[in-house]
Length: 339
Ligand SMILES: [Zn+2]
Image (tube, rainbow, N blue to C red; front, top):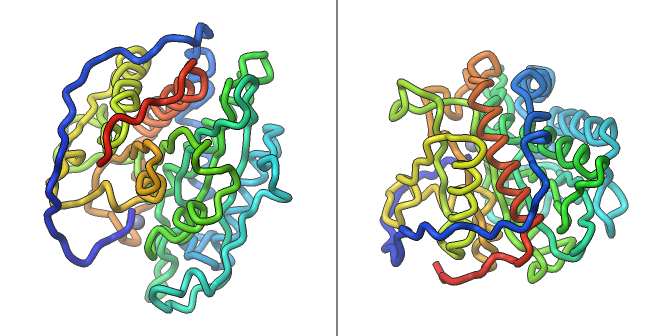
């Protein structure tokens, strides 16, 4: 999650209270595959992604590249390839692009992508995104970024594994799924903006973005339970997307969905502060799953021992169930809002 220096209020146009059911066109029971996403596997990956060895994964740093290699190895272990049309797991982003708005002397960096092709509508793509950069080392202290956004990073690895297993069983998604690990988020959502300006798949064929940024902790508003997730942005462009999140959660994950930060006049402006926004601004329905901020946010104390792995598992499973429906439903999401 990107920090912002100042706040201002935006005027909102919409609030959502629609409860129409999402379409039900996919008869395969996803529970079998959802269970592939486990707290123990997420923990195993996160202790590596957020280890001191990765040096806080500063954009363009050696530590970030090391984390990227580990991620790619996981995809290869699960026989998941890079996307059709690409020649590797990397989308290179030159330093000049990363430093264009504010020169922080960032080095060349890369988005990392993996891909599962759809069986019936391979040209329609569902994106699931999480940033794998964090803020590096400051005054000799490693900023591990376990929650921000190691949690989303490892969630993508496990969600991809679950879809790969489904495909192996003959239950692959109808639409294609792009697993997009973006860089440069902490310095201004650079990696996702770069993707949106240099998309591998045409944006008009990009059905939705499900973005995960910080899903391993709880905030003070939920001191007594971690069984919740903030849902931000789902209804801004598409009532369908909102309904899918609500229905999949009701059926499978039973989290308390908190829409507080989705209020258009919320002063935190979280809707504009993570990578889904670079899809939403191009008119692509996008949803951001988030646990809120906490005392260790953007501190060297955001470490993997503080992650609540049961909550991370459930929230990753919700993202999986949402992507499953987006990839398998008969019709594309209807865009019926313009916010
Ligand atoms: Zn952050």
